[in-house]
Structure formats: C-alpha cells, structure tokens
Image 1 (tube, rainbow, N blue to C red):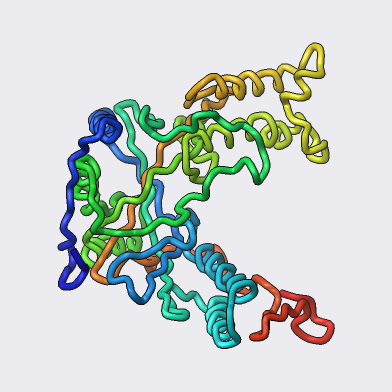
Image 2: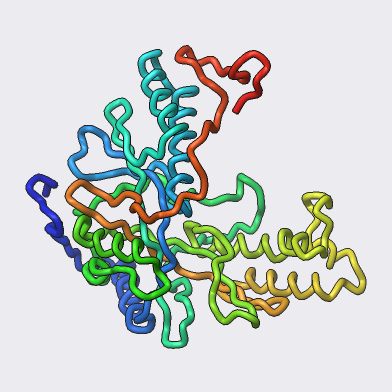
Amino acid sequence: MTGEGVGPGEWPIVVRVPVEPVEAAIEADAVQAALSHRALAVRGPLFGVAAQAEEDDWRWRVVVEVTHGCPQQARDSLNSLLWFRAKDEAKSTEERRALLAAVARLEKERVDELTVLDTRYRVVRAEEYAGLDARGDVEMPRPTDPEPLTPDWSRGAGAQGPRIDAGLVLDPGAPLSPSQAAERLTMRSLVYSGSRFPAPVLADSAHAVETHPDVLLMPTAFLVVERSGVDDTWTPASGLLVTAHDARRTLDFSLVWWGPRHRGLIPFDAEMETDARTLVAESDPPAPELALLVEAADRLRTGHVNQVQAAGTLYQIARSRRLLRWGPDGPEGPRPSDINTHAPEALHPRLDEDGTVHYDTAEGDPAP
C-alpha cells in the first residue's frame, strides 16, 4: 500500500486479528478496558516535532517527543536539535550552513514547518486523553502493559528508562488490532464542545475534522495523577513516561525526596543522598510526616501497585493515550487558537559555518 491517491479520510484501516497468546491477552485486556472505561477525559493538546525524509511517501518519524505543552516549546527543541547537529554532526561547511540557516529562522519566527537538507520538519499537535470508569476514576495500567522483570528503583541518569517516542515512526497504514481499529474509527469525530472553550478553540476543533479527518493512535504512556481531599478531580503530577514502572519510580522519588523538600520537612540544601528513607532509618522515633511518606513509597515497591495515599493526597498511576489528527499532507500542526507561552529566541551561543562556537556575540556583549 502507498499514500498515492489516498484522499481525506480514505486511509484504509488494516486489521490484524491477534493469534499469538500474548497478543490475544493484550486484545482481551483492551476489550475489557473499553467496556469498563466508557467515558473519556480529554486533557488537551501536546506538541512535538516529526520529520519526513525525501524518500518517504507518507511515513513520518518523531524527532522531538510529543509531550510539550505549547508549540513554541516544540520549536525550541527543534532549534536545539538542529544546532547540535550543526555543531557535532555536520560533515561539510555546506551542511552546517543549511542547519544554521534553519536555526536562525527558529530564533526569530514561529516556524511550524521547514525543510533542511532534504528532510521536512513539522511541529505536530496531539490530543491527550484517558479512559474514565463509571465513578470518574482514570484508567490505571492494564495487566498486560509492559513491566520490567526486575524493577529498578535507583536514581540518576543511568537509571532512566527509554525516552518517550524515541524512534517512533508514524505510519497511518500500519496494521491494527480490532480494538485499536475501533478506537481509531471512534476518535475520528473527536471535537471540543462546551462553554468552557473559547469560540476560536471550538471553531478550530471543528475545522480540524475537515482538514485532518483521520487519526493515528500513538503508543500508550503513563503518568502520576493525584487527588486531594479538597479537590475531587485528578490532576497530573508528572510528565508522560514509557512504562508504568517509570511512573512508579517517579512517584517514589517525589514522595521521599522532592516532596519532603517542597514541604519543608528536609532542607533544600541537604545532601543529595538525604531523603525521607534515610532520615526515618536514622531517627528514633522518626518524624511522623516523614514516616507516612516512606510508608506510602514502600508500598509501591511491593509489586505492581498503582495507587497509594499519603498526607491527605491519593496518588495513582494513570494510563494516558494520545492521537494525532491526519490529513492528505500528514499529521496536523498547531492550530491558530493554540497558545504560545513565550516568543522565539536564541537558545545557544553563535556557531559559525566552520563549526566554531562564539561565546560573545559582539565585543563585550554576553552570549544569548
């Protein structure tokens, strides 16, 4: 199958019935989740950058993770990506010059698409949403979601799992399971509604269904959400992560390291190794507030635990889904009503076409 001659809303959905035991179990989980989580909570848009090589007809590759809260954050990440390519990877002056020309545009303009060295880059827009059960609770990880054989609870850069969307290829023609095909068909008609949205947002949402009538489902992600006794709604407490265990490890760190510092239970200038666990182990009796946080964090380590409570707050590992709207020319970009939190700017020192970094832009002027 190729993209030639495929018009709006005409991408055929190729359904592949699971036959392997693991695939069949994943599909059964998905069907059960659809029955028990019939409502959806739409969190709002996320932004990233996708690239299309000259030889690709319709496939795009994610080069900046689709997790950013506004289009300019994605543009800034593309700016950095191209700047470091020019600094570290360019094989000729001509190649570096082309990369730096793109960086110069991104420093001054809100550019949502540009072509550099036969590669087309586009800021893309996704909708993030999650399933809700009859009580309004957010869907938690499913039994068949990937989990490490040996959970790693260590900290630091070496302990981090894979980056979200790393190496992700966006292919609207890829085969889907029956549940994925049903979700894709259902979500084609997704539009914003309700009085809480400004009129331009509603108009852009309705227009997007016409210009980008198909959707592509992105891989499942996970995050920490929380709900306090004062507020009965779930609010995000972390960014998106690749696995449920990554989210649990993030919550563990928040409970014993970041949370105590934020609440004044541990000084911010304490040693990096100091956390609630070390202080509770060293104190007799331990501080009650720290002991409760450690107790909640320790429960996370007893298995695939997806919900704990501490200090009046209920924490949960939530299962997040994302979709990209898709049109004849590929994935949807930012909408006119999408908000940018800041303006374009220079993010790095000046790099010349010979690969030399200049830390002063002019005599006596500091680097941007």
